Length: 171
Image 1 (cartoon, rainbow, N blue to C red):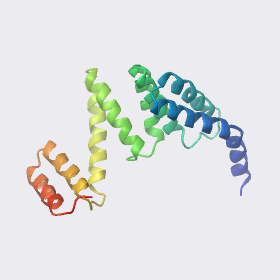
Image 2: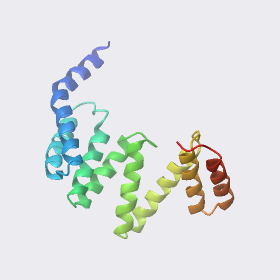
Image 3: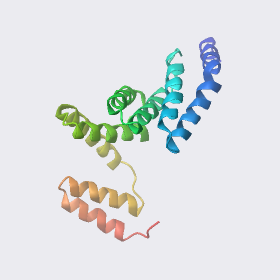
């Protein structure tokens, strides 16, 4: 193991137990409808991550959860800041990325922020096209694709996906 990796591991271990337990507390409070408590713990988690050099690899995920806490408290302005900051930090086309796009698309559309709504719609389309490249072996997947093609006006492809879905046993 290189000296750089050892230093990195030591730095993270300094904060690891505290931020990880606070992260779990924050998620629990969020799940059980206590967003104020979730915000308190998740803010500390993000603060600890920001003290780390290099940045913690899950900082984007922690920012998403901080944004979720702000949203649960009705503060979409702060939630949006968290999501925008998290977007380049999370895995592109991953679950958190998809969540961020859906959240930002909703907020920008509802607030009539057309410029940002169009930007996010472009990213959503890129995400959807990436999803279409993936293997599709379940009826649910084919139904999702059929719905996508219906929304985009490609009825021929939608019909093909419906036919594939109906020809498979439901899981």
